[in-house]
Image 1 (tube, rainbow, N blue to C red):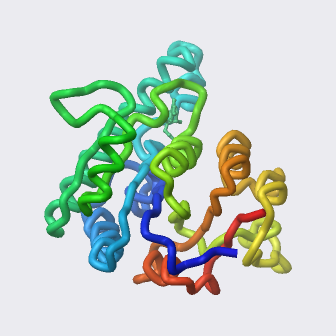
Image 2 (image 1 turned 90 degrees about the vertical axis):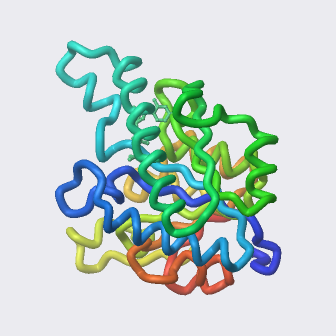
Length: 241
Ligand code: UDP
């Protein structure tokens, strides 16, 4: 089980859609501000925070390639760029809440942000700066969930939190099935099952190999991230061995 006293460094993953609000597209400033306040609470409590944000509120490679005109690889490049747009927006929100922030991109974009360098990222975190990891892994055919696990392992985070719009993981879709059961804890194998799919298989396999616990929680419950890191796991799902 988790030793919450030792959790000093975490990685929080937000999907791009989380930034979009009701309409599912673009970026809502009120949501950015809300997230910034949630992250600030962590930093004030001496927790070192890395962030990965998706790009689904702008474009996803698979959808871009659907019509056949745009190749999947180009679509994925567009998707990775979308994550940079979100990261820059998030940086502004975090900075205006008084935090020190660095965006590090997997693809060199020196006029916009730093390039990802693991040791430099670790140094920023040690100094209390929030680091936002942008442009995914830098490779097509991957997701930002896989990016989040990869970066979490690289920076030696003790926990990864997938901050979502739902309370956690159910054994089936709670919107469709009245008897859907909430799963407070589950194994990596269970997390990979088709009906559950906490993240894509690549992401979960990487977490399993590195014994990185994955927490799924509702980011819209005020204070949830801090409560979880401080040990209250009652209102979330946790994937461990
Ligand atoms: N992407 C990619 N390689 C990566 C991470 C992301 O090619 O390592 C692309 C991919 O096209 C993906 C898009 O970026 O669809 C946005 O990421 P994702 O779909 O994971 O965002 P989310 O669903 O979390 O908003």
